Length: 202
Image (cartoon, rainbow, N blue to C red; front, side, top):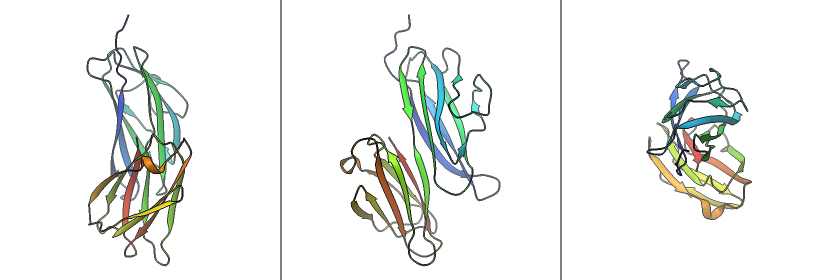
């Protein structure tokens, strides 16, 4: 009998540019807790504007991954690194559920989007269906980047002001969220052509 009470965790890193110089890719790293039994299964539950071409190590069945299809790993697998590629420049989301060999379950569902300052009136990017557990927002400003980022969450509005080129800021907006169906909007302010990358995660 396996004795292991800690569940695996996941972290999304990136973005990096694909060879075309336009589209981006990320890595989702799922790590078993120290001394744990190992990751057993990971299943993609959401692939919005994303594909998963491969992972390290390779799962059973082999790559590429498919929505709703479980990927299995041998006993003792301590870490799985999943490659996730954007299909186009619109916002994307990727989500997984899984378990280790001791039966501990986990979920991972970060949302990413790029907020661009276009010519004319500032445009707003909106994401819906965000659970309260996903209350962390990481803003990675571009270079050149936005000067301010206006955020609206369920009717609450505030600005992240004075952003510098390449700056990274982290927010926790749990106090403005409730339940599992929150709406978050982002409006970029600055010169036309400026942008920032935004990650929403738990």
